Length: 330
Image 1 (tube, rainbow, N blue to C red):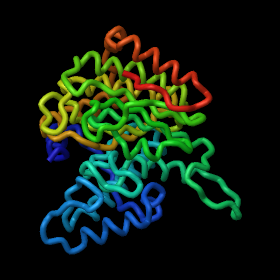
Image 2 (image 1 turned 60 degrees about the horizontal axis):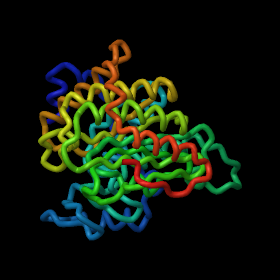
Image 3 (image 1 turned 135 degrees about the vertical axis):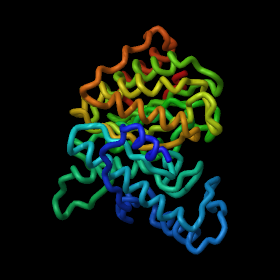
């Protein structure tokens, strides 16, 4: 439905065929046992049911859809990295709640994490006698930025080995994680928990405009992947931070500037949440327009809209080269 609307508006003019993720690609993030569980529990279903690992409803088509979503994210990353441009993976089911051995929160396979490890693995150079281990990466540093209403617990769970994670999310809303930030050597997990009530649109935008460059400067990613969840928009039936649809344009501008500075313009958006059709379509349309290099990005929000203590704690955490768990960044 979203794709049809974007085509009607003349914004969706180029499409890239998706493909299914392979077992090997999925198993860089998920256990083989979990992959088998999803296939077994969805095979031959005549009525929807809950996956045994958690709060995810599945039917007979879920396994195939999840494979294709993960593969679509991989294609988006490959295309973006190859062309130095923005690519949007319009896929479902979402993925950022899926942990290595557990599906939850509408998610079966962690699309962004699978795509990130696929990118890194394509850049690993090993001798024939060296076993392939996730994270043996030269020049394959990835930053996943997540602006979904909910915290991506599954993505945080696999961070490290060249994969950093930055998230803003309502807290203590589902899944109740994402209160602390830390770094592991050169890899960073920065969580910015926000009140699970209305937040001014300008403040939400300013947080991203101020913090994303700080995180990217510390990580220096070769590729930026965005967990693009639009359930932060006011009126969303599953989320709702009270943020206006108009936030998508300056968010995309901040992401574009960061990608141009650190990643030669490479950024792959992968759809997560967002359950209001009008808000979802409008937000993605704004991202398409702003990602066009011929367009001038919107003017930045007032940096004073970001709470001073939030910036102070973030900068202090990023200066800590010894690692260790830090306090909440709100």
